[in-house]
Amino acid sequence: MAKTLDVLTAAACVRDGAGGSPTAVLTGSHDLGDADLARIPARLGASHLAVVRPGDGVRELRFFTTAGELPNCGHGTIAAVAVLALADPRDGFDGPLRAAGREFEAAGTVRPPPGGDGPLLVDAWFDQGAVETRAATAPERDAFLAALGLSPDALHPDDEVSVASPGRERLMVPAAGRATLAALRPDQDRLAAASRRHGQLGCFVYVPPSAGQPAAARMFAPAIGVPEDVANANSTGCLAAHLLATGRGPAVTVDQGDALGHPSTVRATAARTTRGIATRVGGAVHVRRAGRVADSL
Image (tube, rainbow, N blue to C red; front, side, top):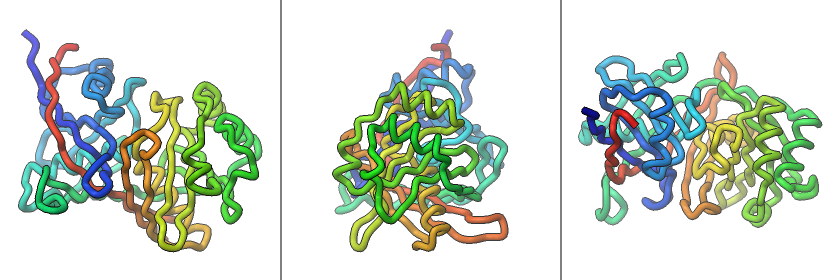
């Protein structure tokens, strides 16, 4: 007889207590295979699933979309940290996690929601590790701009197209302004083809921060089954590394998800270390509800 599992749904990287990226989190023991795990996000209205291995030692994370397993997921990590923190709301969570063979520190602090009404919020952070940056090649730049339908004169005049990697490369495209960003209607098939051809996870299109206004971004990754991501924490860390590498501030706040009706905010800091530029990424989370799935789908 099939066993029913409770899978939590967390809104990762909410803005002012609302919005955020719907992310499923499975923490208990289960008998699900990888194909079954990949079906869970769509069943619960989420884009990703974070699977947390039970135990008291270093918790191991795995991530899935409908296209299969991912080696890493930033907002999935943030959602998982929030669920772990809520297991002990007074002390929260502070400890090591492991994903794709990399061990890193993470922390989650539980706090009341704004105004005292609504579910508890969790401020969740994790150490992303070293982020490598480089200039984009002309073929990379041209292929992605064509797929995005973005002309060169729509790029930000004070920034350049680049590539950043916290373990997997993605193209970083600076747009001229928020109106340009909002108007993007990429050709998803061409974007997926360009991503596969050039070995990129996807394309992070952003407007750099300016005086009094945070950065804004949209992340397109159809090659891994995510046409557009509500909140992409790893790419926000990549942006922090890029800004520091090009002589700008070590911290960035990025508004995302507006085009999808899920306003989200991700924060990241970057620092120069002996290993290169390392980043820390986080956001506010609230765990909304539990869904129920059978352990044999």
